[in-house]
Image (cartoon, rainbow, N blue to C red; front, top):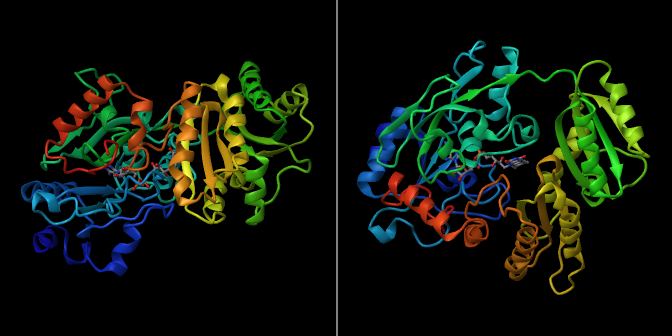
Length: 458
Ligand SMILES: Cc1cc2nc3c(=O)[nH]c(=O)nc-3n(C[C@H](O)[C@H](O)[C@H](O)COP(=O)(O)OP(=O)(O)OC[C@H]3O[C@@H](n4cnc5c(N)ncnc54)[C@H](O)[C@@H]3O)c2cc1C
């Protein structure tokens, strides 16, 4: 098997040495580690197709990985007994797309660009910017997260409030199926209703249906001049109202993020500045654009909302943004145990109560933890981070969070997916019939269950 893989991708791209494979087998959080018989790094779609044909013939499971920044364990093979062994095959193979980095020419009239799956979000945006356009997906992991990864997780990110999720940015897709066939829908047509939306189906499939090898992304207009403001609030409801008022006043909300005092304190302890002189329970970062004097419009907006303390900077305002974007990393460096990360959403009207309920987890003496909450407030999305959780309490605390979320009519997975972390709870978000239809879609694409076993379906 290994020598045939070497024939396909070249000797140096089939890794078996533990020193070389270790980085591929632990996830970004350090919570998930896995085992693989080898890490294989194809360069072309034809090589992926040849690898998949071989794995299908030999019944070898394949786990797909892009930038390995996913936060639900989906990019890591299982750690338990060999998944392939029960079928008499070798353990799973980890297929990394990081060598698939070609970027096509930007079509400035059709406003799109075709890229290979391993191109990073940052590189897609840089190519778009060079042509006077922008990529509608952005997230703090932009330097590592890949085109294939953001499609496979249907990532949201900081521009979702403006441009929608990753699914909304897909015009075409190229993917290799579990049996090695290549599925290609690649057209810049914005209207094309011939049957089912298979590219849309692969968005959010988390590597369980096919290996995405290329994506034709639509591009959006470049960001106009913006103003970034960070303001302090006593109540989440007032923060939400500010975003609504900004829109009512004709401003375009490009991003709207919420942080708590505890989160900003943590980030500050890792070397970032405190944005405001006056402490406030909640801090909101809004980035807005508009016509006329946008800065004055933001000053007026904040004054009308009775904001006592705020800071304004013209975009990109990287230092202000870094306070929000450093949360994930500062949290990872501040917890005594692997952080329990639960990315959830609730209807926007329920956000204030959900914040209160989730913050109250800190008062549970029976299961101590330090909750740090932040998120994309305009999308009703809260990133719940529970620090210093004893291993034995992880499940009970996870269930408490999900009970709060479902009581508010929310989702147990807002934008990170199910991965391996949340497979036990999909019934909280989908009916039996819904889950059965999803299972039959999986069986149609991957009848032998070779692609990312254990992800989404457990
Ligand atoms: C600091 C930080 C900030 C983040 N912020 C956000 C955010 O704002 N919004 C958000 O949605 N996420 C966020 N994330 C999570 C993560 O960046 C996204 O889920 C991202 O889409 C993962 O991309 P990746 O290339 O790293 O994928 P990986 O982590 O490698 O994989 C993620 C999943 O996609 C599958 N996959 C990857 N590539 C392919 C492919 N080519 N074909 C088929 N399946 C594939 C994997 O099997 C796995 O199931 C953040 C993560 C970090 C570390």
